[in-house]
Length: 212
Image (cartoon, rainbow, N blue to C red; front, side):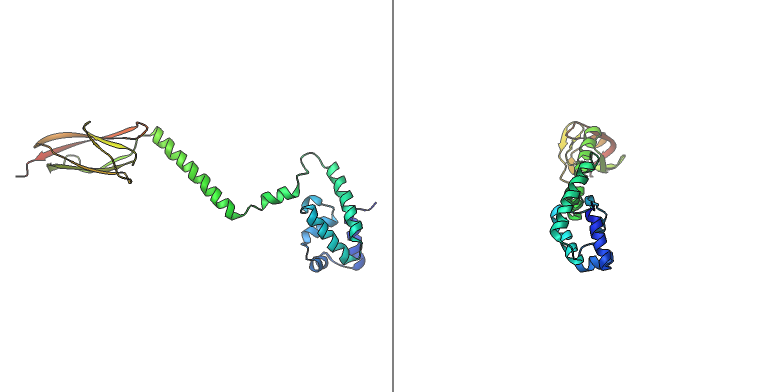
């Protein structure tokens, strides 16, 4: 008993049509025409579309569409029964997975990267002390009172100066305060402690002189 593919190929040969001729007349992609003639049903779309292909092909080569569709049903059932386990993944499922557009994938990838970036930031804050940069005064500076203390750290940190004065940085991590000192030499300890209780400390030696 001949298969659908054999019947289509034979009818096409009688009409002296090439694969390209069938594709041009029926508007069916040539890869689907080859799949029909090779009985490669796994490379064809959902059976509803495949039946439409068979009907168009049959009319083009002068065959009865209903008879060929009945043979397709028979062959596809037999092919599914003889396929090894795992090889019968429905084509529509494959096609659905492959049809995910770039417009869907790009936001998904960006979302995953942002998520992992956030996790990395959180783990760094948990394991590492916050960065601490003192922009003024410089070490060994000679200044007058009040002394301006300015720097940058992580926005979630609290600045402690000489275990006394506490300063909260702004949203960009910049902090600024002024402290009165009598003339003399001082060692200033500046600490930044984040919400995970990780601390960075910088120590400066300055000399405060009278304005006069």
